[in-house]
Structures are given as C-alpha cells and as structure tokens.
Length: 250
Image (cartoon, rainbow, N blue to C red):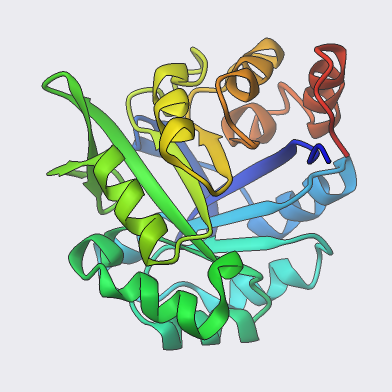
C-alpha cells in the first residue's frame, strides 16, 4: 500500500509569536501561531509542526498555553519541539494537546532520552529533529536552534537515534533554511538510504516546484514555513503540484 505524502506547515515560535529568518538568523514576526495553525488546517494541512525555537537557547520549557490553544483549533496531528528534556516534558505536552514531540539538543546531550521517551510513549510519538549543516565535506549536527555546530556526524546520529527508538526523522538543512532555493536533495537522499522510519524534508522551500523533487529524493513528507506564512503558496497549491507529478496526497 502506498502511503500518501504529507504536507506540513511549520510554526517556528519565539515569545508567543511565529517568527521566520534565514539560516535561523534575523528572525522577524510572521503572525499569531493559533491563527496560522487554524488557517493551515482549513487549507488541508496533514499535520502542524510547532517549534519553540528559543526554548533551548533560553533554557526554559515550551509555552504550554500556546500549545493548548493551537491544539484546540486543529484536528490533525500536532508535533511540538523545543525545550523537551525529559519524558515528563513529553507527558506534559501531550496533556496540553501535542500528538508527537520533537527532540534535538537534549537528545544529543543525553542520547538515553530517546529510549526513555520511546519506551513510555511509543516510537510513533517521538520525532528526532535534525538541524544539519554541511561542514568539511560532511553533514554535521547543530544544536540550540542551529546556533551551535557540533562534531557529531548527522548520518551516524540518525542511525543511532532510530536504534534508540526515534519513530520519524525531521531533517532540516540549516544551509537551505529560509533561502527559498529548494530542499537539500543530497541530504534527503542520504537520510532515506539509512532510515527505516519516515523522513520529513525541511529547509529551503521557495516555489511550488521544489516539493516534488524532495519526495523523489526520498522524503515521506515535506515541511515549509516562509512560503506559507508569506501567503506565497497555500497547502492546496503544494498538494496540487504533487498530484501533477503523480505523487499521492490526501
């Protein structure tokens, strides 16, 4: 059975507002997260991803009130990331309406966190968020919202994380993020080769014809922010373009 490709708008949130920048820098206001989530739900989004982009940097928890308000407006899966440091954080987020959680920095600091979350809530609730950068001819991990580059090989880390219980990979290219030049197809393909779990392509979408190549490269879902927030594209536009390429969508 062929699984339909998912189209996922991403809400990067800081201080209760949706923000967007280029390469994770120069963030600017893009609107109210609850209003935007509702709009994308009505456009036919398959899921919503909510990333509190400054929670880890500020050393605080995700804004639970915004998560709850968003969950009350959308009746599709809601993934929440940013500031998740323990299985108890996951329980709290789920109590506020999150279906899945994304973890990045905390899992790199303490890989056992992945197993703790997967054992308690199931792999389907655990999304490994990978903020990946090209460095020295290889893909390396970054932490703290793309601000801190590590020596950790992104492909090796993805393999380990899947073994530890990650049920999905959210692969975000820091180099492509916000540039609107298209997804990093080489990165997507490399992740597809090693992964037995779904791969979500993120970073770089700028035009309607950027999405199908990401699926062809191996992504199971495509995630975008700027093109939706700016009103350049709707979720329907993306699905129509994917259908035109023979790609199954909901």
